[in-house]
Amino acid sequence: MGKAMRKKERKWVWISVPIAMLKLIDRAIEEHPEYGYRSRNEFVEDAVRRKLRELGVLR
Image 1 (spheres, one colour):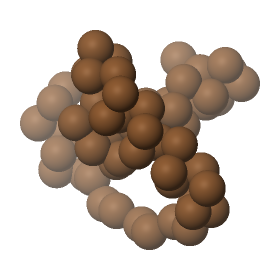
Image 2: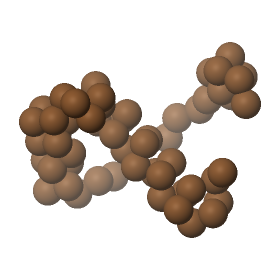
Image 3: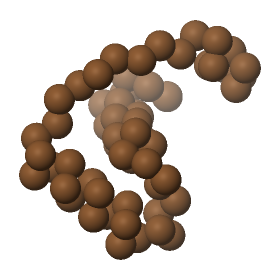
Image 4: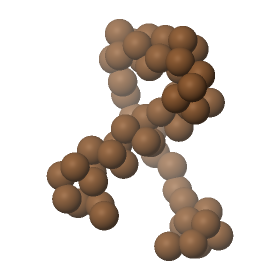
């Protein structure tokens, strides 16, 4: 799927994350800029994508 197509179809939902987990995400982003995450959203989106690939739902 092309980049333009993804942007056109993209819709957002809000999810709840335990505060303790959110603090860990923030710490990982702040302490490890080499990971390349600029935001919580990027981190969570990547984590979910990786898990979906691991489960065979996304290729």
